[in-house]
Length: 196
Image 1 (cartoon, rainbow, N blue to C red):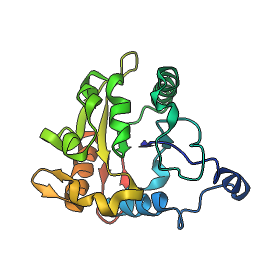
Image 2 (cartoon, rainbow, N blue to C red; image 1 turned 180 degrees about the vertical axis):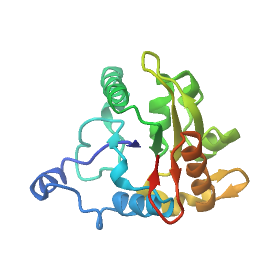
Image 3 (cartoon, helix red, strand yellow; image 1 turned 90 degrees about the horizontal axis):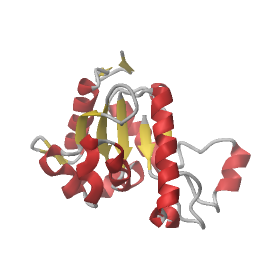
């Protein structure tokens, strides 16, 4: 499961509806995400892509903060919907994109509670807290590995902020996801798709 922050903005949505899908070559999120997955040998056809926050951002900037994020009722419904998706799909690995998603996940599992106050990559990466090997969601069977990764649309300028296992930048993030794949018992071949 690849978990982003939010979907799109109201200004772009009518064109997307007309096209029937997002342009994966023009859209920075898709372009960078697909390149990153390819580097790791992860087949996007085996991934489920979803978002933490339901709905569209008002206006023309999909990267701005969703105003309703300060509404506990809205956040509760978004979290309930994500748990419903996890219950149905039973993912073994969640790639949590960007700095807003970890705090969204924080109250859902005792193993992610430390993310409640995280705002920066330094805080998320502290003591390798960017990877949770066995997050359990109360009321749901099994456990899932969660890895915090850069949001693909801001990947380039933020790579210098990532650190993991003594590595920095792209090497750190690739090593982090590879460890997540091992922990979740999903293998990824350097030159091929991930497989069970």
